[in-house]
Length: 171
View 1: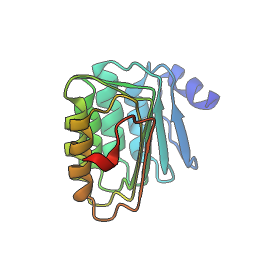
View 2 (view 1 turned 135 degrees about the horizontal axis):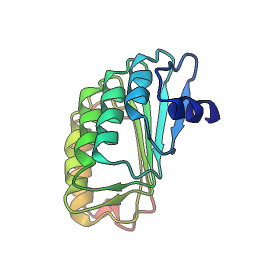
View 3 (view 1 turned 120 degrees about the horizontal axis):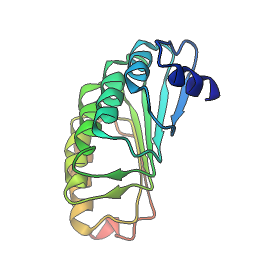
View 4 (view 1 turned 60 degrees about the vertical axis):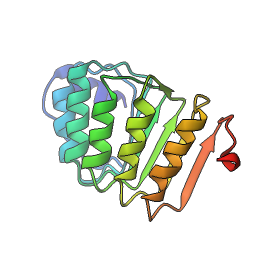
């Protein structure tokens, strides 16, 4: 990660050549270079975005990089607040990168109707095989939305829902 931080600080083009996993929780001062590097990577299979408060431009660069990438199959969003301005970028990623088969949402805070929007995107993911959701904020209606979304995911074989106080069996 130190190498990427140094490359971003130089604000120059770079390539993610042989890296299979990338955990992104650094300040994004040069996201347009990072976008190009993600998009061009042929080896990157796993991307984690965590604990970062990206602005709209940064989300735009990151989402376009992931959408254009042909090797990422697994995504993890960790400790992020999903709100009205970043949910659109996350749903674009899920809807427009058809190679993603596994997504994980850990310690996510959902604002307003962002969970509903997320469920709509999940239902469009025809290749989704694994979903993990860790939040304590799901309400009865949210669980119904998620169940409806998962019915559309015919390839889903692994589903983990952690720290959810709502009973899945009473729906």
